[in-house]
Image (cartoon, rainbow, N blue to C red; front, side, top):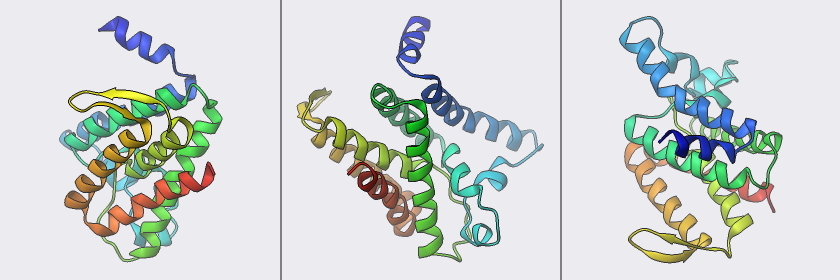
Length: 194
């Protein structure tokens, strides 16, 4: 296992490693603060459109570092690590972080404009995942890969399948407002790479 992790991280640049590790640390820090009654990380980092419009603009970036629950954490960490490791072969750390910030802020601005009075704090990196899927499609769309249980498919087909699953999970967990807003992260990522 140690060799697997070290091999996986050795293929990534420093910026890619930091991005994945920051997201991976989000849930343990949230639990540590919540269950020790020391602090509530979600109150500091979650995106709340009314608070965003009152000046808490950092939440347009920080909400992507906290998952929406354990299932979101596992699935999002898997796709974030996978897509970042693939894309970091062609992108520098700065390009990766710019893309991360662009897709994250796009999702936050979309939600804040669509539902400025949305009271619940939104967390999760779905906007980033949709953006990374768009980048994966754009950069590697004609390549072929093998998906377990399905067989050989193109990257375009795999990206569509993952995006569809992500949309369904997001819709049933968070509703259509958040789903549409997070899809804007993917749209902005697609346009940025055009």
